[in-house]
Length: 238
Image (cartoon, rainbow, N blue to C red; front, side, top):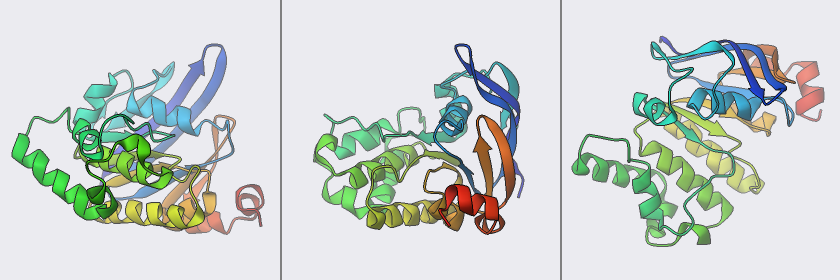
């Protein structure tokens, strides 16, 4: 398995605030890698830099051999890197099916291939199929999260960036969402996951990076970090 994403010496500023300081990490093809850390650690900022929503001050981001650090977001999506944003951001006045179709807007492989993938998403997420004609704004939080994942899958991504998918969901729904993430990964989609629920994230990830105030504080196999005393005290509450 080759390297899919490499972030090297990344520096990102919000105005005069130095939010990301010389961060370096990589994600290999087929992995689930998670970034964990407290609020304000720089996790979402890192995701936005990778997906092209924020331009880094310095450092490089490479995806499948392409330098994407200064690339526009829609071009990054076309390369096969899709983000499921924090807070889900579904189009509330559009139906479930219309939201999913929006996910395919960068594709050039024809209506029949897109229709086929729509059915694949409905097979994977049957609750969305039941609600395909329902307005997205009327869905529950968990269903909106499923819709946001389904919409990203309609881009046919090679890699999925997931930003806080468990936010605001009940423990039962969190389990369901994490099972979906695992299934998507088993189908060959590489995953970079930002998650406050460090326990769940470390359970499904292959490797993890701990971010603190814009720097990588620790890294390693997810099961090792889950048993690390510092990590347990700071993020797992034990």
